[in-house]
Length: 288
Image (cartoon, rainbow, N blue to C red; front, side, top):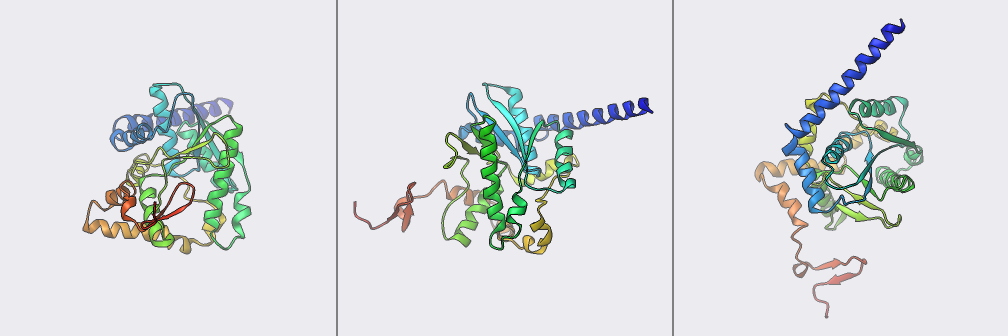
């Protein structure tokens, strides 16, 4: 019996190693152009990783953050200058099944995670107005705090290109403002900490293709609020904006790039008003 357990254990370990090696090889070959190159481009263009950094790669358990972790491992393999990685997983209150899924995927992909617990899901479950927004803010605060405690100076989140352009449109259509997710921001509440988004140029369709190619199954959200209001989540503002972009793209294949470029080509001389970095509002007709 003990010999059988040993053989089974060895077989499982070999399967995990083979799976991780296939994924890693794919990032160097099949998916190098669509995944690793845009990842590396954002890092270079926005100076997201610098010598001496210790980066907390924040893994939610979803496809985007899991891929980001593998891309960071590939970047580290090149090791052009010294930096450290810590693969940080926060459990906001997952049930046992969802937590086990995160741990199983991390093991399969050979990502050495550091996991810590919070009670965020319980804290926001009874909130009626914008629970997802509150959950996201609380998650970020906990990630900053834990990462800083562990000696990191940056946290990396897995927002991708599609998240960026959707945020631009959501701000205009539902928030009455022109804004976007920045690739790098200084934390206002945690001195010396930065948030970086190295997936800034990675397309969601390519992430999905990568996931499907290797038969990987990742978490969606896994919170009780999502489970209890599935129909509402399907009709969220972000989902409506996704549908709008798809419709516009049928008429103009360049529409996604144009949305992205719109926040790179802002002309302050041709807008009615704008806010500076201190929040002070300026009008086009104000006197010098």
